[in-house]
Image (cartoon, rainbow, N blue to C red; front, side):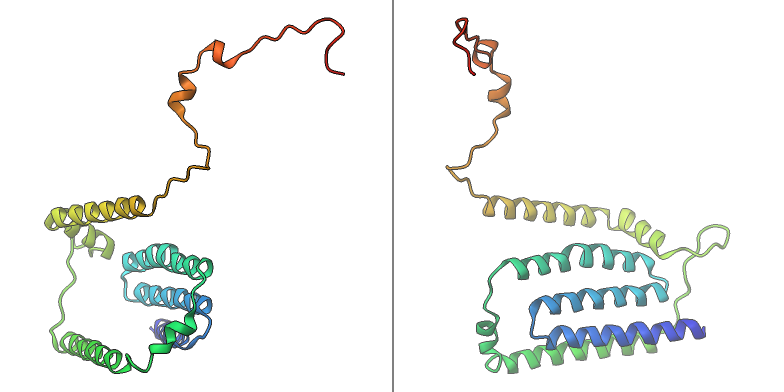
Length: 202
């Protein structure tokens, strides 16, 4: 218990510090790197409470895809962040209002979780406790199977739509045509040249 408490405080302190550095850092690349660090520390907190599935999803999806995508976008695009920060004071009241609403929701959720009675952990036959990953799998692929598959189809359509909208065909680029290559005959591919004796290349 002492080791778990120490690890909790270490992960929590690093996550809070990384979150503060994400907001306060002037370099956007550094902000994304601190965001990755915050994700890793949050995954460590999930592991401590026994939610290993959520920890792996946080690392694989957010760190492996979203955060890296943010990093490449920030590094490759020439974005004038000084111009983006110019309207910070004008939108400060709206941002403060949204932050206050999120803080109130967190207080309500944490308060209801503290006041609610303890829920016993489900168990399979034989009294073996059900793991977090198996419990989520049982719920997703039984009770919420249709919604799970529908969400996957929506994401697939969104991905295809993004590819179609951003695809540009350039006329000056030579493209490979597999059908044209397979349709070539021997006469189109091979040319026999008779070179007279003594007039070959030196």
